[in-house]
Structure formats: C-alpha cells, structure tokens
Length: 582
Image (cartoon, rainbow, N blue to C red; front, side, top):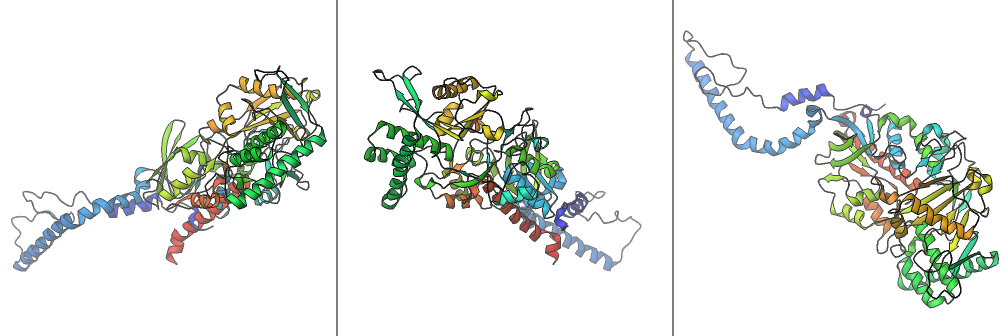
C-alpha cells in the first residue's frame, strides 16, 4: 500500500511545525528595570558584584546593536510580508490547529459517479477517503423503492420476493464498462445477461396506438371523457402512421440539417407539419412523437437540438424482483459504506489553498468542516445550476458559463401496481401510446411502459417530461393519479384503481433538481461537458453531464467517476512524501 493511503499530515508532526512557525510570545519582555529586548534564552541580569571584562562589554554592545537592528528589520520588512504569506501558512496547518479532520480525498455525492470514484481510489490503496451524501440513501438518481418501504437496500438485492419500483434509472446498457464491473462483482445474478433487448427510440414502432378524437358535433370543442372517443388503431394503420409520418419526419430532419444546420426539435416539427402534413391524425401523431421525445431526452421540444435524435441500444432491464437499479447501487457500495456519511449536505467548498481544500457540510442540523488534498464534486448539473454549493473563490467564468448554458431536464413517472393478476386488462406489449387531440391535455400522460412480464404482477408506468412534468410536480398525488387514470380508462374502460402508486418529482427534489442533461439548441454539448469535467485547482468534477459520449446514463456517470479518481490518484502520488523524496 502506498504511503498516501494513510493521513499524511499527522497531528504530532504538525504541532512541531507549528511551534517552529509561531512567533514566541516571550521574545520581547521587560528585564528588571530595563527596556532592552533580549532573547528568551538570555540569563537573568548581571548582579552589581559582577564586573565583566572590557572585551565582554564590547561584545555585549555589538550583540545588542545587532539584535536591535534585527528587530527593526523584522518590524519594517518581515512582518508586513507575514501578514499576507502567513495566512497561507496558517491555512496549511489549519486542520491540525483547529481540529478539522483531514482526508486525502473528499467526494461530494454518493450516486454512481461518487461511489465509482471512491471504489477506484480504495482499490488503488487510498484509504483516507470520505464521501458526503445529502440524501438518506446511496445511489442518487438510481432509486429503488422496495415492498418493505426501504429505499436502495443492499439486503433487498438478491431477495427475489421483493418487487422493486425504480423511480429513476431502469436500463443497463449491454457491453458497457458498468455491465462488466457489475458482472465481476456478482451484482447481476438476477439478470440474464445473455439475453439483450433493444431499447427503441420513441415513438415505439411495436406499440399499440390508441387514437382519441373529438365526438362529432362538439362545436364548443370541450375536451372531456364525454366529448372524446378513444379506439385502438389497427396494426396496419399504426404501422403506416409510424413509417409514413415519423419516418418522413426523420428524413425531413436530415435535409434540414444539411440546409439550415442546427434547429430546435419542436421548431422543425412545426415546419414539417405546415409543409408536409394535411391530416389531423398525422398532426396528432407528430404531437405524440414530440411528447415521447421529451420523455426520452427530458428536455422541452423547443430546447432540444435536432442533433439529439439517437439510435436504438441493447440493454438489460434492471428493475426485476431481487434486483432494482438503486438496490444494485447500494450493494455495489456496501464495502464502502463506512466511508459514506448520509444526510450530509455540502454547502461550501473553499479551495483558496488548493492543497488544503475545506469542505463545509451540514449533518443533522450541525455544521462541520473537513479538509482534503483533493475534492471530487459529483452533484447533479441541476444543483450546480442552482448554486446550492458555494465555491470560494467563485468558479472560473469558463466553468460557470458551461454550467449555465447546458441543458438539464425533468422527466417523471407515475408507477401503478395491482395485486390481482386479472387486473391487467391492457395488451401484453411493453409500450402503449395514446394519440390525443391538440388541446390542454395533449401530450400529458400519453406514453406508458408495461413491465408486467418483468415484475410478475400487473404494473404500468406513466411517463411525463419537460413543462408537463414541472406542472405535474405542483399537483397532489391524488390529482396526478386522477389525471393518469383518466387516460388509462379512456383506453381500457374496465381498468380498476391500482393498489400501489408511487410518483416521482425529480425537478422538486432539492438535492437533484432534475433528471439528466440534454443537448440544448445553440450549444456544443461535447465542449460544454469537457469544460464541466475540467478540474479547478484540486477540485475535480464528475457525473453524467461531464461525459459527452454517455451523457444522461448511469454508464456515463460511472466512467466519469473512475476518470476523476485516476486524476486524483496521480495528484496524490505526485504530492506524497515518497514521490517528493525520489
């Protein structure tokens, strides 16, 4: 184990150094009736009976003159310098003198980026690590709510009687670095990794589509259960809509990119409708596609860049009995649990002295400070945008500009579970889409995920994003369930109220303030993510938004955490006594 694995600034050593630096209070003192400054090592005044020799008197006079000159020099030249430089000297040893606990690395946040970084450091021999997490659970935006009410429980990972509900991430990308790490750690025993499924880009081609239209003769154009007619489209008609309207839109986007470059998703969609579509049903389908795309990317259609359109990916579904993405995070971090302080909200990071960064946090209402040689910030982009952590000095302009300019969206879920197996009155398809007329409720609760076959019990998940999600977060649970069930009842008239319902509100969660980053119109996302990832003195940054290739994913968060840990390790090695001596 490398020497940096232990605390390199021991208290006893530091106290000795402090004694060397501290001005001795006795250096100037009054001698019996004398005003002359003398060294504290001098003896008492000479008695009247002592008669020094002439040479001694001359030596004494010269010594007194030199001492007086030295004192004058200190006052005139040295002390003014110490007033400035002494501040940094004091900070260098502030931890020892004030009782602040010191660490080689302090990591802010115990989401996937934070725990991946902590594991990488510990595996490399750096044991003096502290992780501060504001939430009362490990895992960040991977959040499994278990049948017993627990959140992200290591004991529920491997308990196949537990049916987790994941309010955040649910899919693991196949052949990713994270998949390999989890397989090696034995954390995917409940997942058949030999079977991969393709996670399509919405709208979903194999989905049953339900079409809502206004009842004929409704002159007042009132949208209600009595004025709307809902029916399932025949598979042929649904396929035609998908290929002709959505396929046509994708081709339109390609041509638009060539001729006009980057535009907003919503803006191009409006032009497409004006130029290419004449049927109300075609227009309604594109409106549904826009709402589904907001769910996929978490950004509003008029903020999303047309360069956001992605490809289908091979994935594993993690929210199955005995697993759960959040439970997996807690299990992954179990060996690090003694390094993690939950309910510890960081409020300030002072990197005035880059070699001794002071991190202030509040835990159980009590403010504390720790000192670290390196600090890693893994909080969400939403928290950085809100300025919930004070940086002293302020972050550089280039860093703040990237934070302010990047897109960070909101996507929420309404998860409904039924205990009776006969309650599943919907088609045995993974995705269900509702095409609504243009109006106040258009695009709200129109995309539903059906994980019933994975869970073993009837379950539906309503998805909502962007402005619709932000409005939803102002509603009560009862109002949200009522709105969601109204859409489901229109498609499935015999559906019954669920036995269990959980609703996420990521945009209102003060320690997250959103879900994940997205490519916003007018910004180069890769450039922004690189700026966000760059270190400032000895403060590193990680998280999904810092990974330009895997943004918005757990894999991106893990990659960024491991990359930051590598940089922190190099810094610690370079500044360690063993390396300095060599």
